[in-house]
Length: 204
Image (tube, rainbow, N blue to C red; front, side, top):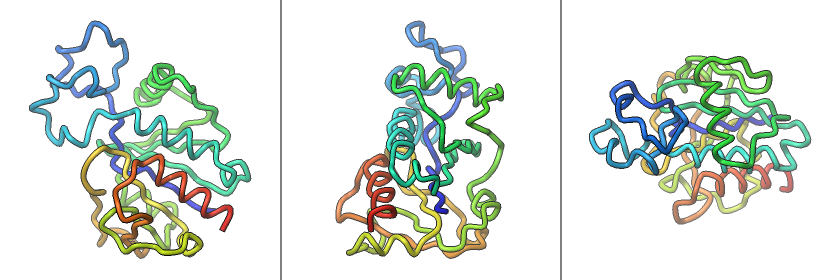
């Protein structure tokens, strides 16, 4: 089994300091920079937040991969505000973005979902809990992997679920070994990275 973790993901409820500014044309209680660009100007780490579309597309890519259909993946979303969503491999996420937001809003508000379980948890604690031993942290600044079959030596993959920056993690608090690697000489979108990882693990 392999673990894929979308780390520091830009998926969260609208912060309390922005509640009074809720958009009239946007009914979901999920932070989305497309609707709150101006209101987010003074929000801490604003360049890393408000992009639930990244999580939507990336999860669709992972869930529809052959390796997931074969039951060989554990899928997690770790959010900016330290929540962890464990995604059942058999989950059929809505293809429609706004329906996806509706599902995520309910999950983040602790409504029961038989296929998506949510807990308050730090990224470091998650990695220790799932007993991640050899962890690949995907970053454009990592050591370039020249052959995709080399990915199979890792049991856990950290992919940034945000638009800009690097994955924030305290490596000293993680029991397993973290290696920073790159699969291309330029930065790639999260769903592209996830697709390459999933198909490399299955077909290599």
